[in-house]
Length: 133
Image (cartoon, rainbow, N blue to C red):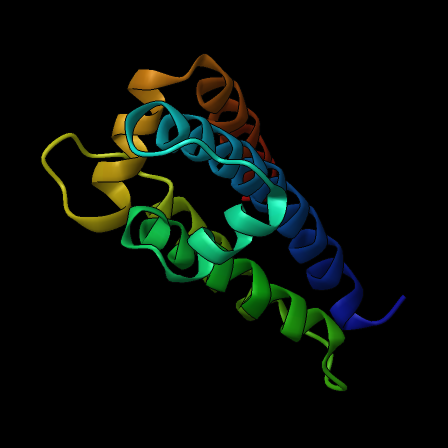
């Protein structure tokens, strides 16, 4: 086992937890959009909204973190323990909801208040973060 294997395993676990949370947030936000703004009629329409509509823009920060982890896992150089520690800390900071925060933290807080599925997904992600410390 090489020195990057433990870091790679930790980052894979982190990525999977963040991806599961992202899917739950996306589903929750799509349902909220469907109720509050306009009826969603297809996954294609949703994809366009996720990419271009300000309603979904707050999710981009989480999406970008997952993509960055994916790129690190696919890089020729294996991730180091320091890389894993830094990304785990970044994820922990990102997943800190704040009622009076800005951007992701405020929207994340609102999603947690609105949707029990988000609470469950948040709990699962936080559990993984604790295990990765």
